[in-house]
Every structure is written in structure tokens, then in C-alpha cells.
Length: 317
Image (cartoon, rainbow, N blue to C red; front, side):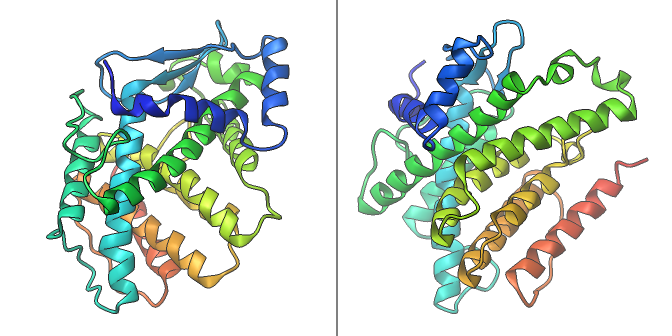
């Protein structure tokens, strides 16, 4: 298997090791202490998407090529759809709530999105006639490919640091817990706490609270996209509620709160991106989008969260 995403492997490693001023020395220390294996368990097989995870026995982080393909193509397609289909029409006062896919750029992004989502159920080869990290057909796609590469590399770094935290923070109960249906409420609560701890660590490795607002937004988009990928990877809407992880919508919401952006335009960008993510989730699972026009982007996102709460109530009993 030779996915186009493989051209970015060295970039991923570099982004992870050089995320901040302490990341490389911290990782070296963890490797020397045998808390983390220097090698990544890289799976280049032909299976549907499987998310990265740590292995307590060999201290390796499992990273699947299909997952990387899923993540890159999802980021590219959502980024193009959001910028070209939502943000630009909003700026020009001609957005009516619907995305116009008639332009070739948006049409190709939608086709790539559909392929990305298909990987969550079955593996198929990347059609390299569609956008990918190896080539592009025009300057517009070149622009979005290069931007996607940067977002993707930081998103993978965030995901790897999450698994790094599980391996290095003494999260033995995370690996040793009994199967889901045998867990007590206390065990479930403890595991959710470990997930939050790993999320917080990964976030803080990428984003410092004292950074400029635009820097927090730029890095924050990578973290948001990583969480959107978790939202869209599930194949049943009932899995929105997680017994041993934070609920997927809550996890996304927490990122917006942690970013704590000050500038209104940056806040708007993130909240509305969250709205698009939930719209795509509802679409994937054939759920009705009954959202209504709201005064602010944050109000719109809050309303979408309420729709998901109604959805989760169906599976409570």
C-alpha cells in the first residue's frame, strides 16, 4: 500500500518532535526511561479506519495509514467546504444556509469528503484524480493542499501526544480495565477522567494560553479538526454517547472553551466550523437538521448541541 499521505510521514515526525521547545527532550527522556517505544507501530494494511492507540506491553503507539488518509482527506474537504462554501458567501452576504457545490473546487472537495467517510466502513484506494498531498490540478487546490498539510501535521501531533500521555502518565487502569459492559460507574468515570487528562496534555503541548489570538486560532484549527475526525469516524449515531470517553460533542465543545479566543472574528470562525461539523454528523447518520437561525455563531453552535442532546436522549433508555 502506498497512500499519497506517505509523502508527509517525515513532516509528521518533525511536527511531533518539534511541537514546542521541550517536546523533543521530553520524548527522548520518555524513550530512555522505556515509557515509550521509539518505534511507531505503523500499519499499512488494507483495513477500514482504526484510530491511533497505545500498547501497554511494547509501549508503542499504533498508527494506521488508512487513518492518516482519512484524516488528511477529511481535513482538506471540510476546510475547502467551509472556506469556499460557508465563509466566503458569509463575507459577501450571500450565504443562505445551503452550500453551493457547483464550482469544480467544491465539487471535488465533496467527492473527497465522501471517500473519506467511506473509509470508516470499508477500505478503498485513494483515487489520486482527487485532491491529495502528492499533487493538485490548479493553484486553488495547491493553496488548500499546502494549508491542509500544515493543519494535518499538527492534528496528528495532537493525537500522538494524547496517546503519549496514556503511556507516560501511569494510566494503567486505562489499559487494564475489564470489557465495557463489565465496568462499574466508578471505572467509567475514572477512564473519562484519564481521557480528559490526555486531551488537556495534548492541547497544552500545542497551544499556550499566553500566545497571540491568531496563533491560538491557527493551532486550534488542527485540534478542532482532530476532534471533528473523532466525531465523524463513528458509524452509529448512538456512539455519540461514550461510556468510557467524554461524549464526542462535549469533547469538541471543550476545545472551543479551552481556546478562549478573544477576537470576535476568530470566535465566529471556530463556532461556525463546529456547526458545520455537527451538520455533517447529522447528514452522515440520516438525521434531520432542524436548526434555526440564531443571533450569533456561538448561539448556533449551542443550538446544534441541543439537537445532539435530543438525539442522545433516544438511546438513554
